[in-house]
Image (cartoon, rainbow, N blue to C red; front, side):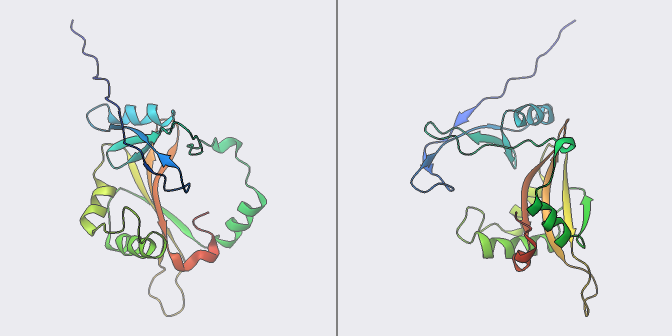
Length: 193
């Protein structure tokens, strides 16, 4: 009987570039492609080692002089919300959550554009069009969900409006938020906190 082993992923390191979070610092990232029949297992395994997903790439910071960027893994069973988090949950109590398949919609893209224009107009995603947005949401070998958050219908509206969206991966032991965006006009609800 012949057994075949999965091919080990190849890792690469980016050239140093200015850190987007800490002024005056340089960053590097360790990354590998996320593809093939073992992509889900690779994503599950590397997420436990601090890797994050961006489309079909897994990466983690690999800075020689800094370790400020760290992924957080939170055991839900042990989580106790802070006073501030409880206050935010009360303020957002009317917002409804709906987990859907990873399928991009025009409403999601419109909210994404408003978010980028208000919060990250000079960022790396600022010129993303609807086709690139759809690829970010839909083209992945990973089990994912899009979680939409909607506020209730206001007087004069036919339906409630989309307040936030989270692209979320489903792991063997939990969930991982890949990318999220929200209505910048709802800043008082602390949706980005």
